[in-house]
Image (cartoon, one colour):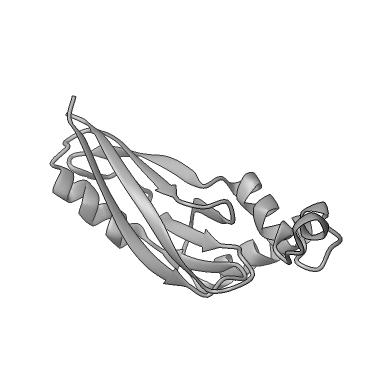
Amino acid sequence: MPVFQKTFRLSTRGRCDVVDITGQVSRIVGESQVKQGIASVSGRGSTLGITTIEYEPGAVSDLARALETIAPMNHDYAHNARWGDDNGYAHLRSALLGASRSFSVRASALDLGTWQQIVFCDFDSRPRDREVTVTVVGE
């Protein structure tokens, strides 16, 4: 069973910056020449998330608002006290959302719904250069 892996980089603004990475992931799946299988998308770091959403301003804003309710930026986090940081909320959001997701590959393409895009969420308290690895396994 062939395995194809490729990494790409992106710059983010932090503070719940949501970036549509569907195009990059789709290109890598195409390069893999896998007809059917699984594509794993994994972000490197403990203050980010990978998920799907309909990538439009309303849904992106709703996601940010929901995460602010669950893990608010301005809260008393033990992580901040221990390390003198201001990103305890970012680690919690990453743990809740997850830093990787797997997607089906069918007919040499991502098998996504019409309004489903893959997004990278940067929760950290500052802009960052990030790395995403896509691993495609199949036949």
